[in-house]
Image (cartoon, rainbow, N blue to C red; front, side, top):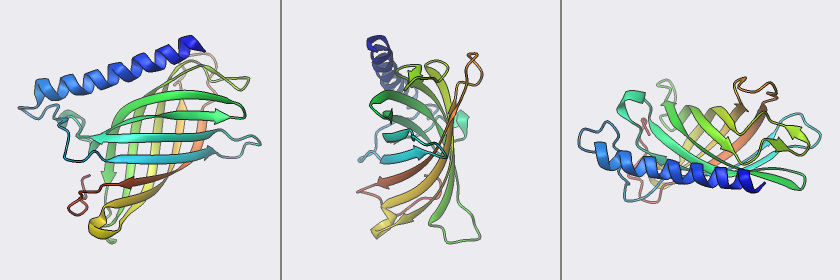
Length: 194
């Protein structure tokens, strides 16, 4: 347990360090422009696995930053939180791109997000089940809507899958339904590309 907590903390510090270094080193040509805006968009998420008698719950936060140009993504997302089942919890950190599509046939407040995030779990065994290692890939598909004054908030429902991509012989994967809420206090109106 101590080794997995240390690994999760090290991954968190490494991720934050990479974000800061890349924003300083490449801000001039916007290859890695991760400059901090006057507010930091943050999502609050809560979700649960589907179709299990004892569900795995997820509570997490996600922070948004500008994505490197070469990814052609709308943003980078740094997430951290915990998965819990019964009395046991596992911390996790993730970092990955999110692509947003705004349908042109409906009101511009609706959007669809697709994300891929390498994820480090703070432990491979969870409530008697082997999740197949600490390194996983989380993929997600979300449908959401901007609302409120100046469209400063969003709410979305996402389906996400997390698995180790066959890196270990055990790979049960975890499927979840997650509700997300974002509030941007200084939003000057929603942007389709955000």
